[in-house]
Length: 259
Image (cartoon, one colour):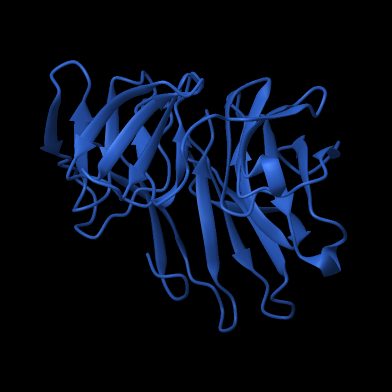
């Protein structure tokens, strides 16, 4: 999955089977693939930058049934985005000065009914695991890693150590735990509660972004290779899947399509 050139978007089921290629994204010269996220319905939303203006990104939705893409809307200065837990809304941050002041917005999935929820942008990642709370990573000042109320815009810092880490904190689907790849010894993926309590260190395995299983019973770690840690058995195993050998995980959600 290079930033530019041919990018294939696949889905599999929870155990790596039923692999299906949904679409192929081939950004024209001068454009780059930014990111992709699953919705609750099993559709995929992805973003690519515009050729005419590299400060603008276009968002598209791939229908899992027809495998057809349709344009949603454009964002100037797009930093990152996330889909809501119900699959009906999208949150995104913009951060380039030419786009206006940095800010985070929520909108319907097609970009309508947009409203600003914070005067800061998530530079690295944005997560919307539960309906009432966004988690921002890379915000300014005290909001570098914080939880944000979608309704009120109230922000609070998440008391989890974020120094000497590879990548960024990843919040679980129930918003009760955080996974971080810590580089201090013994290095590995560390698990905390969102209140800051240390729970576990998965020594020797980590990566810039891990992915929680929808039921939080497993954690998929992308380095070295694709491996899954099972919290019930405390075992780390290779994630075997029917997709392409070079598959890189972009998201993991429970959908009504069984993926």
